Length: 578
Ligand SMILES: Nc1ncnc2c1ncn2[C@@H]1O[C@H](COP(=O)(O)OP(=O)(O)OP(=O)(O)O)[C@@H](O)[C@H]1O
Image (cartoon, rainbow, N blue to C red):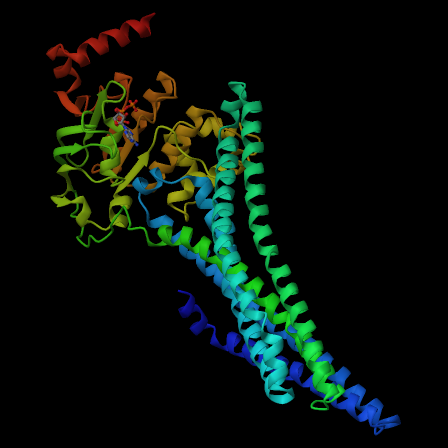
């Protein structure tokens, strides 16, 4: 990934590298020039114009170095930010392909931390760290060459004696820093998760009087994250004393050995001056090494958290290429499914379910809570794959259809629909972005929500969702029904989607759906409901109990059967009368 990115941006990296090489060459030239000036001054051979000229040259070199440093940073940061954007897009794209089974094992706050904090760390490792590493190494080699070859190799070697010790210290610090960086990133993820969950559930927390406890927990996690970040910083800071001590020791050795060599007239004072200046120039490569190692360790730790998410196998495959025959009948044959981790001793959520839904027909699915009704819909939407049995549309098993075809075929209204932060009109038009206001209103009327919308302060232009007006549960359900009707799919699935509306509204919506049959005679509908009045007009009703179909037939047949449906019907009738 990183190599491919560098290859792609080779111009930026190459130009930045060339600038760094110029900087390095000029940097090592300066002490040599200063040494030369000193020696000429000592010999009394430099005065007036010539001296000013020499000094001017040194100042100009300093200025050019400054400009080049600005240049490489600009080039480099641009490339690194592009890498960040690329990684974020890839992460998002990958997550968008994952099925619900994947998200069940993930925490939203963690995924958000990956997309922000961890990618920042990788970005820095790929940008700043790479070029600072290149720059540091280059300067180091040049300076060392000047010290040993151009001045005196004995002096050079003597001054380098403390450096292996620094290498050892660096190795030891890096090992601890990796651990600390990993810990810090993980704790930031925990903190993020707490923020996400508390904000999403803030009403529940308030109602249960748990705000204080939630605050305490947040403070604890914030403290943990701060401590972990501090520990990581402490290890980073440890690089500095290691550099300082090594260079101090090296300078002391250089002065002692250098003084001795000057006394023996083996090197000049100018050379010794240049040598100590070179030692000073080692500060940057040494600090760069510490900085680069810190950035790389943080980047590696972040990459170790990111890679599993980017490489996780998709829980949902989209390899089907079959075409969907017109007027397809939906069939379930021996459909069996257990939720992962449900345990060997628990019953399957669905157990050998058979059903048929021909075009234009309505199927009602009823049963006690937890009977497996929503699970059936999840399998139909391919949010999970059956353990045994199969679902077919027009004789084609669902995995053989492209997901886009399947999704265009089905309009699903869940029990708790999601509204995005947008206007009511945009929320309805979601599945059909080109819909006209008239289309949107017509769908809203069919879903019996037009009057409610008209009463909102700005009608269809009212903002809803997180930043806008909060609609009631029943209004949300009907906006979602309008959205599904506008999508004009061949199979409409109402998964307990009328649970929050009153009986009168329910009847109105179901009547509208029946009227629509003239316009779309081939549209089939699945109605899942607890109130049996919602399914009494269905062509067939199946009753689920603990994942099995225990009764099936029309409303009249089921009443005659005298089983669960009949007793439930009687119970609901009495309840309605009371
Ligand atoms: N994500 C899940 N992980 C594990 N078990 C689950 C999951 N979702 C549902 N179940 C279990 O599967 C069974 C069937 O659940 P399902 O949601 O299909 O019931 P339902 O008939 O739709 O109920 P309700 O009428 O309350 O919506 C239940 O026992 C439930 O606990």
